[in-house]
Length: 253
Image (cartoon, rainbow, N blue to C red; front, side, top):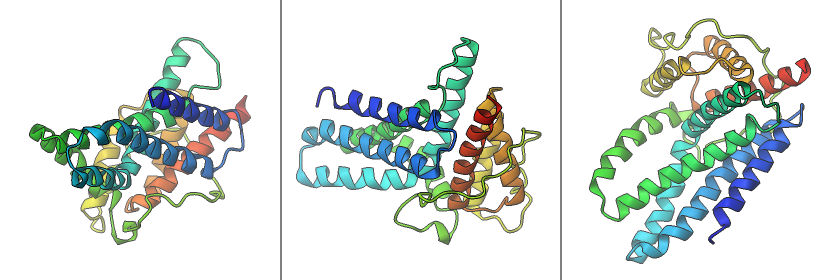
């Protein structure tokens, strides 16, 4: 148990490396990486925390809450871990280190750490830390609206991108923040508005690095074409942008 978290993180990093060195990586690899990140976090936090909870009801409840959190937080975690990968790329660019570990190992490892943080908050709540309730609500409500943007998002699994995404979009460079389009749309609901708000805030935080800029520009074009997309649409756009940018950079080398 002591070394299990490190083993799982190393395994996720190796999986990320397999994506990064392959110019023809596919969506199922991203699907597998994010699901393994979430399940690894649940496994480690459960093994650590279950014995510290005083009753069977709280222990079973903890597992159920973690699974619910995995479903709700999946798309936000994909977005935030991709942002972390952008800064990982920027760091290696700043250090002038050209190794195939800049993006996808950081993508999966940061996803696991984010899931683990969320699960740890749930553990603290079950231990009676009332102040954590407010933080869970502050983080959970936007995540819920983003992950369930419309009725088509009411699915048991958070992700269905296990098949190839063909064709991948054309990679474009970013021009301007497109996420205000949903603000003026009469067709967007509260969940789509929340997706737009999150995109608007994150847009300005993406660093000037090759993969980061290629993903940002490609997502900009995808959102412009469909500003009223739901969570599953946006998740597909993110996967396709990750892969298209990756292939374009590999071809450029």
